[in-house]
Amino acid sequence: MEKSSGKKNTAILISGRGSNLRSLIKYAKKKKSLIRIVLVVSDNFSAKGLNYANKSKINNIVLKYSNRESFENRLLKSLKINNVDLICLAGFMKILSGSFIKKFKNPILNIHPSLLPKYKGLNTHNRAIQNKDKYSGATVHIVNKKLDSGKIILQKKVKILKSDSEKSLEKKVLKIEHKIYPKAIIKLLASD
Ligand code: GAR
Image (cartoon, rainbow, N blue to C red; front, side, top):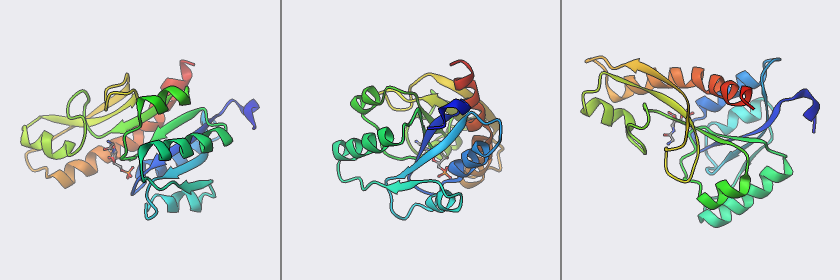
């Protein structure tokens, strides 16, 4: 499927708002982008992000998450049908199993709202503020079987001000997330 263009067939997995999906769609539309988004998958029927996929006429599906094994089997089938070379998790809030990662074989990227290895898991902004950290940030990393622990591809810092709340910090971090995700994809694929 249009492999001659050199673009990687990419699936984006979301669970909610989809602002990172929106930034990746914007990047994918550029002539020189290295990816073609062939599939958007949500585990949540009411994910707002699905609207971005629909607006850009990108093939999208919702896979109900009743249990991990069944979800991952259906996901693997869809990835195969769509010849997916790269998965980008963009606010996808379920944990993929080691067995899924092994079966998929191609790279899986994730974006996380902290300066990993600090603050794996949830509530990252709150934890950074509570600990009086001077900086927070975002990280794009390869997904492996340990939560938020795979090889870091790109990371960018933001300053935490005394006046920052969890909400204002989230907003600042999100802004840099939208910048670094496309850059991390370029970095990963350029080394291919
Ligand atoms: C983003 O901040 C992303 O880094 C985070 O969820 C948000 C999704 O926003 N992901 C995680 O916490 C994954 N553990 P979005 O739906 O607007 O892209």
